[in-house]
Image (cartoon, rainbow, N blue to C red):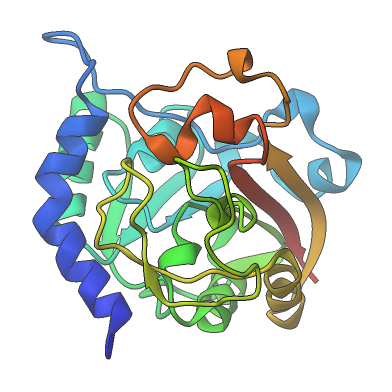
Length: 260
């Protein structure tokens, strides 16, 4: 794996149509494809966050690794000031542009790598990255770039597969590697992702330390879902997100941090 990021870029370009078709599979004829909003719920903001983020209509938002644009379009649909999505896959961005036009919202999409963002310094109040950083070889560079494009008191929110979850064989529910094995490896167990995706396993401590060294203060960390009852989870299809496995360990690890 001489160039894992380059391999992943080529894979996403080749796989974009199939991936977006899977995402939109349940869209009704003539209906809008699904989007989601990665913006924090103003009704649940902690005091530290409420003091830092402007009102939605003044919020400048960037999604780092936006893929097909569902998060960026969802944020723009909330009526924020600026919504920008960045991704290294031109084919994913082709879908993102189409999605933006279908929704008729004001969002901009830019070709770029999260480790070397083609964006100005101090341009955004909130940066979000969903299930991207675990596919990035140089995490320190990516977090440094997130820090650079955020304003003073800006907020970074991101999610990755929970590193403990990734240790398990989804069929046997037994460990298949060490918690301290860093990779890279190809993700073979998650049917939501292409089997040839190159991923990097990092411990919770390593992720926390990387955030601090990039110039952030970690304010929140969440692990979900957190139920021991398989009946609480009704996912079908993807083995790695099976109810049995999610009932044992969290599927997702999330961080929210502010510019220090």
